[in-house]
Image (spheres, rainbow, N blue to C red):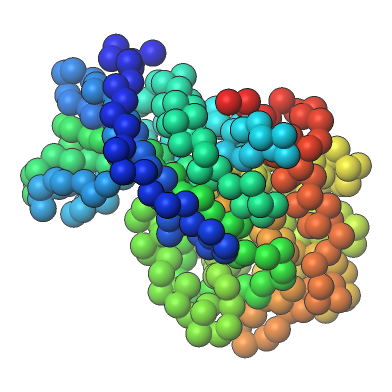
Length: 355
Ligand code: COI
């Protein structure tokens, strides 16, 4: 534990109205947020929970200028009997430290990370929605806040957690189209692709706009050297069902190691499916689709959960997937994963953490 992990709690005196109806994603925020500061020499200190509200910092704040920041996405779920759960929070705590190390943000003790999330979720537990496709999206993030315009590793940081009751990222479980980006790249070997840092997402915006102009939900990234091998998609890792077998790009330095990706691989193996983590080129995928063997495509991620894909657009050519409907494997994975997360199915992999 950090030296000063005792969390000081100041409760709001003006609790907000909870949203009703469609929640969307990331628009409504709960009553409270967690904040902790880091100062060189002292370490992490002043853990506190305060009413959710605007922050105040210098316009010279390092993160605003040079992007020294990282974030995570995780969720809390409400079971049918009212119980509340987190899903594999230790994986987020670990990945957060990997991301932090990549942009020189000081390590944060993993036990404290989980403690901070648990304390905040418990305080705002009545914000965890109970509708089938909804959950409480939790956004922990770190940023450098030195008021200094020199390019340097900051000496001060903040760790903040905010929370938002949300539906799945794409709303209903319905197939989406994906644009295969062949000009811009997301990440290169030696870059920050494996870290969850905001700059990766800022640099992806031109491709997202191009995808949207073509009627697609997100862009699929190819590797940064040959623009040949499939890496991942906007906010998700990507899976293919080819001739009965599941294939996903093997992790490398430029692919984000998704926690949902890891869970889906485990579930696929548990279902008895053959799973391959390997390089897969876009040309091979086109040949597979032309031969009628591309049965399913689906994305995975904390925000999207499991999102079926029925169409890819590559260099003006449409690659159609299966019969155009959601596939049986993506539906089974979505239902199994969300049932484990909500406490409806046995937790045979010890993924749930009760609150
Ligand atoms: C998540 O799935 O939690 C993500 O980080 C995606 C986010 C950028 C919406």
